[in-house]
Image (cartoon, rainbow, N blue to C red; front, top):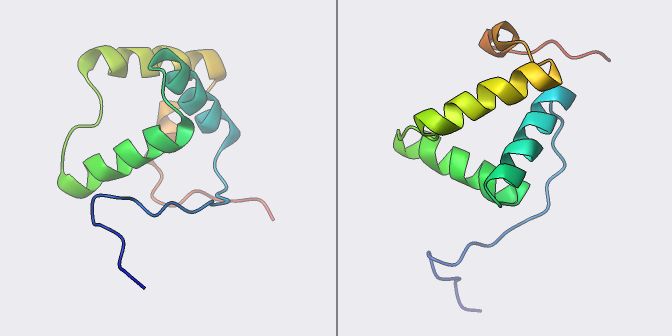
Length: 86
């Protein structure tokens, strides 16, 4: 069996739990930039791993507007570990 090329991603399906409002903001952002949710999440993680700023100033303004539309409180994003209801 040959190893996959490092440039060819071996993608897997994941089931992750996220705040509903956060997902709405992410989905709206993907629509604005013509990306899939998976592409956006991969870009965010790639940026975080390499220390790059993931969003331009314009995109940051769009995100702030989308957060207001969907009721995602910026202060809620500051928590180091989100409390989850059982």
